Image (tube, rainbow, N blue to C red):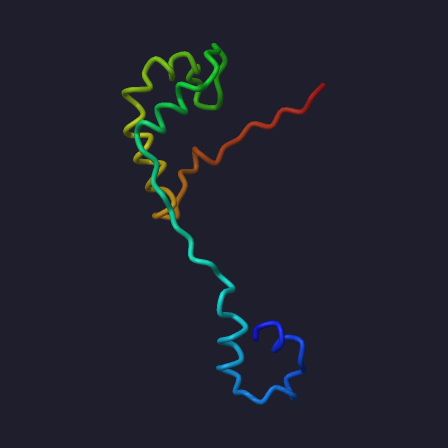
Length: 102
């Protein structure tokens, strides 16, 4: 019924506007579900990093992150799980360094 209503001009459709909009916009926005990660998942992601001495904006080498992954995975997991619900992302997490090739 949704496609047939859209193809006809409004003057031909003999239903009220509330009913028309109910049919047209019935499934426009699907429900979204946010699944939280676990501490084990966060720890496994940290352990999957390549053990390099290089570092990013935070100046913490990935070797050191891997060594303390069992300690930092719980607070990091809490931050990652709360961010979508709060709708606020820390300004320090928004920083990126773009390097152009020479």
